[in-house]
Image 1 (spheres, one colour):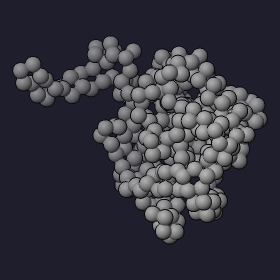
Image 2: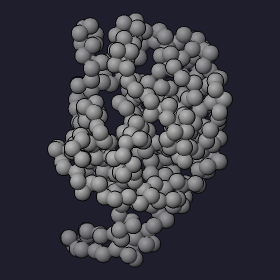
Image 3: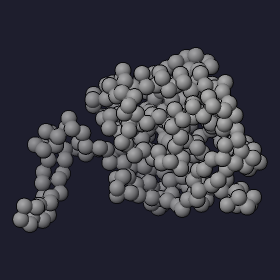
Image 4: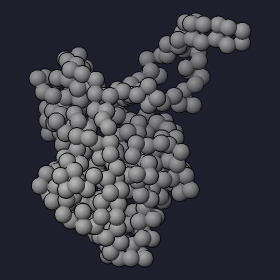
Length: 330
C-alpha cells in the first residue's frame, strides 16, 4: 500500500483486464508461511509489449517496466520474493548447481531453485496513467521546506485543484474490494479503522512486515488537517493496531515502526506499520513521522501541524515542485 501517487492495486476492481490479471494470493494467517487460497489465472503478461524500463535496483531485486497490455498503457513491477527459513531444506535438496568459480576455500555457483521456490511477485498497473508512469521512473528529488502559510497558499490549492481520486480507498472501506485481506477492523465511525497488508509485503515472513491502517473517518487528507480532536482516533489506531499485530503475527510493539508519511502518497489519512529493521520505502527521516511523536505534538499544541514548518522530498517532475519554484520557495 505503500506507501505510496495513487496505489497500483486500487481502482481497477471492475476492469475486466484487472480481473484477468489478478494474481494468486496467499493470506498468511500467522506470519509463518501458511499458504492460503490461490487464484489461477491466464498469463496475460505474454501479451505485454515493453516500451522502456522505468527503474531497477540490483539491491532491492526489483524492476519497473512501462509498456502496452491489450493496447493500454501498463506498468509491470517485478520483485524477487525473499528466501524463507522454512524452505531452506527443500531449497538445498531440490536445486541444481552450476559451478562458476573455485579458488581455494571459496567457490561460487548459479543455483536453479525448484519453481515453487523461485517466484517473482508481480504487480500489474493497467490502465496506467502518466502519473503512475512518472511515479515509478527514477528521477532526481529535491527537499521542500513548507511553512504553515506555504501549505495554505501553495500545497492545499494544488491538492484541491488536482482532485486526486481516493475512490479505491472508499472501495476498501465499503468492503467492495480487498475485504478478504483485512487483518483487523474497528467499525467505530469516529475512531475506527481497517488494518490490511500493504502490497509490498508478500505475507510469507514477518521480517518485512508492512501493514496499513486506513481511517474510516473521511476528509482528513494528511496530518496537516489533524488537531487535538483527532487524538482519540490516533491513539486508537496506535494501540489497537499494535495489539492486532501481536495477536496475528506474534510481533511485539517494541519491534514495530509506526508512522505517517508527509507528503502522503494519497490524501486519506493512513498509518504505516512495519517491522523495525525493515527498510521500507519512504521510512527515511525526510518523509516518515512516528505516530507516537505526532500524538505527543498534538497533546502539547492542538494546532501544531497547522503552523509547523515541515520538510519533504519531491521528484523533479512533480507538479507541486513546480508550484514551489514559481512561488520562489525553492
